[in-house]
Length: 335
Image (tube, rainbow, N blue to C red; front, side):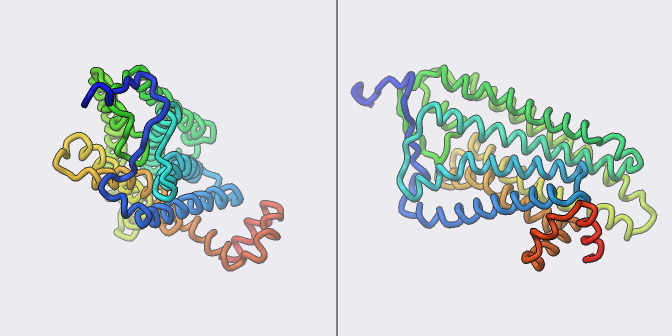
């Protein structure tokens, strides 16, 4: 590259997001499923929050963690999808340098929060199945709040080093990023300095964050399986383990695409770039879309409330204007 084209971007004013290089002609078509999944994710998670908030019988640890997951999913997908859609629809590729670092922070921060909430939900299932008599005394409302705060602080503090390191780097190659959003590795690769600290820190966060989270979840479910298989009848085993199915499906929908994207980004050098970018867009999209569907279908209490809401939408406001005890009574009558 000639000297005239190697402008010093030590403090670049903007970055240019290319979207999905090689698939520019298909951007509009790609935007259709992206937009549909985003709308489903927002509406589905908002519905979960609405149902849990308005139904007193769902005010318990499991559903509080589910609300944390719903909020995380909405912020996580919103930090990425609107900008991607603006690239696909309006060719709006410029993003301010500070805005780019902010987007990077939110994406990685809420990825970590999602993983941490799954650990909290696994702990809730472990206590509920392995020590049910102490569930209400262990997972009190203050304890749930402390766990939620710990999840937020863990991700918020550790990921804060990402934008700090990114701002210190000199950018003297190009400000063009072949991606739909500001991803950590995609940004630091544009620097003309030694980026090993950023790369090693990213690996450390992945291993110490998601890696340990997966280990804790695995250990929880080993204990849960032991407790389930110790039950006297097969019906009791299936019924007890059935309470964990929705959680396991949500875990798989999060960790499988996230790990695939992480591994292909660092080791899949022969994988086409457009395929990698598509997969990198899937893991902030698929879990937020699937989680409310999984919990809405698999969790009886939520499914019953959904079935109760939609056939009676004409009387919805009248029912929710009643006293909470009357609502519970009405639910019992309907069931």
